[in-house]
Length: 105
Image (tube, rainbow, N blue to C red; front, side, top):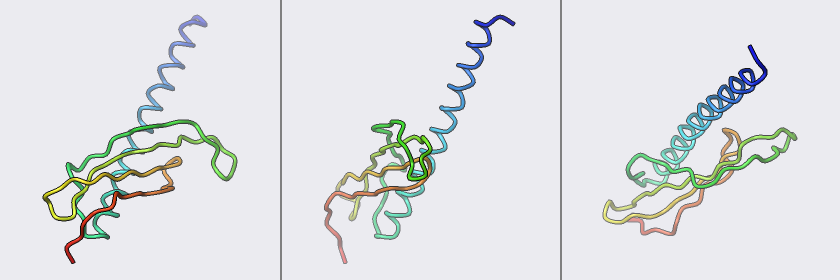
């Protein structure tokens, strides 16, 4: 095996690993969004979440981890759409923010 082949295989392995971890993080973010909506009696719309930003960042313990910001939409009555966003560091939830919305209680 040549050095070029080793570099290509390593690059491919790292890309696949990053894709896999990103997919897992998105699933974790969706679970957090769904739980928050459920706890506030809101409806998570489209059962989807969208990655908006990502970058490497140091965790409080000093390790480099991926910081990711996701957005999602929710409704309180089923007639309107509001925006929410959440941030993760690795798989740890940092923040969830919900747009001001009307509640029917």
